[in-house]
Image 1 (cartoon, protein in one colour):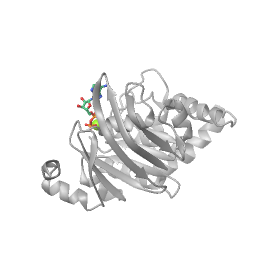
Image 2 (cartoon, rainbow, N blue to C red; image 1 turned 180 degrees about the horizontal axis):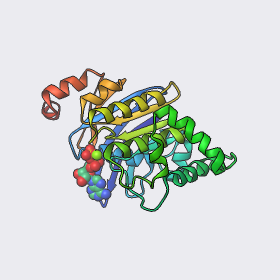
Image 3 (cartoon, rainbow, N blue to C red; image 1 turned 45 degrees about the horizontal axis):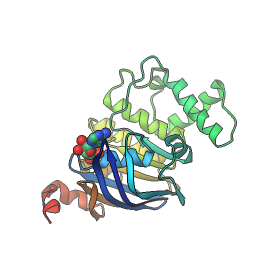
Image 4 (tube, protein in one colour; image 1 turned 120 degrees about the vertical axis):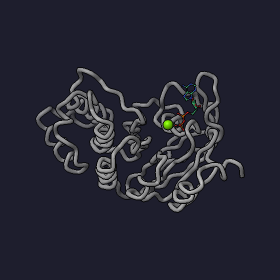
Length: 247
Ligand code: ADP
Ligand code: MG
């Protein structure tokens, strides 16, 4: 589904990614761990097409198409979804309107009919059941006054609603209490199937106990320095990152 080849990128002339290689097949979950500032969020934003970052070398291939220079909305319509580490609040904008406009933008881009608000509420209901989304969060403004856990659930809900096939979830677990973590993990597991793939960025083994990754990668200084199976999380929990960075 996704192939990243020798990706180098910078922002404001600061080199951040220094040769990332990553291949993700359909149905796979890849976790990315690593110290703060190692480039995890930068990598996720670059896959989604964030305009603040400049790709200086390498390619991103998604479903066989080179999307290295494509607009973010094009990537989104093709099925890429980025769940932000820090979702923003959009005061005064109803979540339901926001979701409908996003949904319809994708419908339009794919050549399908626009959905009216009444039809849309049925689509919302089906997806709410899938990821156990709280109805009251839909009728409020986008993330306005949401708790950390509610913001993250809203991100997962967008992933579900847009029927994206490739999700990059940046620290979806950070700041969540155990109940919220379970809810969010369940939602992700309910969404996941053989036609989708996910990158989970996390610092904690706990999330990876609820959502089993096929691979765990460790990023350091703009590169992936180690790839292992789900046992790597346990090793990292015990030993930290030092042993990898020094070797
Ligand atoms: P992580 O998510 O792994 O903690 P980030 O990708 O957020 O790391 O950041 C990697 C490094 O790149 C950090 O040193 C950060 O300060 C730097 N960086 C990220 N975005 C920018 C930017 N827009 N301009 C300059 N430096 C940036
Ligand atoms: Mg980050």
